[in-house]
Length: 207
Image 1 (cartoon, rainbow, N blue to C red):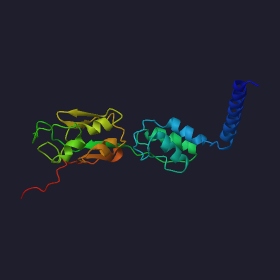
Image 2 (image 1 turned 120 degrees about the vertical axis):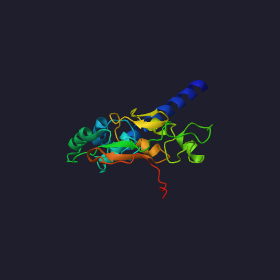
Image 3 (image 1 turned 180 degrees about the vertical axis):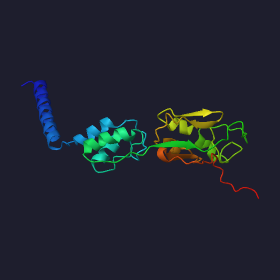
């Protein structure tokens, strides 16, 4: 027999056997996906903001199906929670809604720059150098780390400091996690404080 033909037959036979083994292995080791996971993921916002404490909506959907609380999606709110309740066949109660608040009024009209900063234009980087370049070391640095972290366009930099549009804020908490000055706070919509000190200066007042 022609050596080339023999080699081709051998290679072809090995390929067929390998394909058969792969098909058999895929059947044997196939992982059955929980249908609830797919249904839950479909009703979640899929913004992957991480506000629920999980890596993303897909990760949270799997966690819910495995017993995690189904009322942690701040973005979806009550509407999404009710859909998850229906899928899981259990009453999850009423969803809590949160909004972010930036406690700083130190814009360019009220503060000055202590030094000229030339470096990475991020709040985290500037904060490493003497707590930022603002004359108030406790206030907003203004490079917009929180704005970049917000997936819903709820934050903008106005006159040198961050401002939140409460109509766009979903309460996911991404901005709070991104702020190196820790001046962003989350409050429950149904329990807004009557009095809020819009300043994060922790220095004691002079006598």
